[in-house]
Length: 96
Image (cartoon, rainbow, N blue to C red):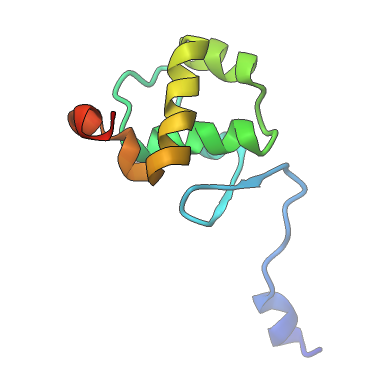
């Protein structure tokens, strides 16, 4: 391997990650801030992906974001049934 090729190879982080909703690696540092109040689709999907992948437990996610277990489970169910579009707050009635 040439020096130039070696330098171009990205370093793999030893930080735990899961694959996020956009197909890219998602680490704890990539998750929404603890102070998040405005929950857009992407943020909800990132938290669900983190729990599904074992980056956070359900209890840790609920504690971190002041969510109820029911609220988190509703996000998870919406993704399972309708994909990320099911997380739209303005379209909830169309999907239920």
